[in-house]
Each structure stands twice: as C-alpha cells, then as structure tokens.
Length: 235
Image (cartoon, rainbow, N blue to C red; front, side, top):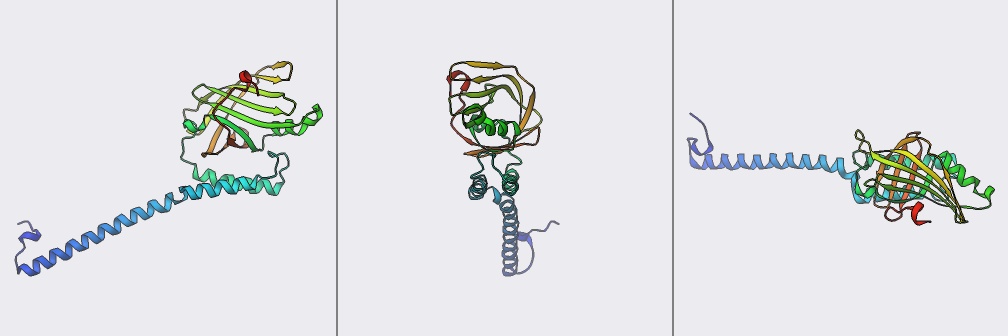
C-alpha cells in the first residue's frame, strides 16, 4: 500500500501538523540549495562586475602613465604594468574576443614591449622629426590589419596585412603581411611584405584592448573610432 500524507491513518491534527512541518522543511531545504547555488555563482562571477573591470582598467592606465608608449619604462614600472595586465587577462579568459564586433576599430597605442616599434619611436629624431601617435586598425569582416606609426612632419610608416580569425583559438587573429610603405609629405616609398604571425586579444573592454603576440610582446591600446584607412585617406 503506497503511503501519502493525505492517506496516513491517525488523528487528523497530527497528520496536518506532520504535513505542514514536512512542507516547511522541504521549502527550507530548497531555499538553502538555491541560496547555495546563487552564492557559488556570485562568488565565481563577482569579479566580472562592472566596478571590478573598471577598477582593474584604471589600475593599468595609472601604471602606464609617463612611460611614453613604453619608450621610458623602468624595470619596476614594467613589472607593475604586466601585473595589472594579468589581472585583466584573468577576467577575460573565456571571452571570444577575436570574433567580437567590438574588436573592429582604430586603436591608438598606449604602451608596448615591441622592440621594432619602440626602436622607430626612439630613433625618429635622427631623421629630423618626432614620432607621433601609433595606431592599429582591425577590420575582421574586411580581413584587414594596418599598423601605423605617424611622425610630426606628416610622414607615416604603414604596414598592411590580411587578417583571419583562428579556427582553434577564440582570442587569436592570424595575419600575413601584404605590403608596407613609408608615406612622406611629397612621395611614398613602397616596401616589400615580410612574413606572418598572430596575436591574441586577451582583454577587450569598451575603451582599451590588450594583445599578446607570437613573440611574447604585449600591446595596450585605446579605442579611437571605427576602422579607417591611413593608406587611402591619409593621416
């Protein structure tokens, strides 16, 4: 014979009291389980709050102040900057940044460890000018990547590349150089393409982006509008 609260024998008051207590215990257990699940979710996702993301970005931006895009970074500053970078990398581990529409933009350099870029920036005075802003233009739908170093005399060094999302890495963009040019105020010097590589966007925020490349270099850039062509439209 199946037992149920409604068919138990005995005085009705006892059965009602038992059923009431049982229901109360069940509701309490459900609340504890639900609260436990919610607490687990809260603990694991709490670091992704807007406040936490903003605070970590602010710490990074403060760390790179007065480093002249990386040209005058001291060892202590570099360690502090890379530690701040890793705090954001931790938050962005599971984000599919390479295919995000937010990655398509003109990005202005804030800080880098790339030796070639830093060399050009430091040596600009030898050519009678000063280095200006440095840009990276990403256009995934257009399969295009442009790296641009500008100079105060109106010149620019522009490297053009084709671009594709890596099928096996949600944060990786593969590129192949297609050409380079030195745009001078009165003429343009064409240079041959030279190789290929990849970079991972390990952090993609509304204002800043962090990338690590095939050689282990780190790039920190800020959003500077939609993708634009320096080659075709000028600086």
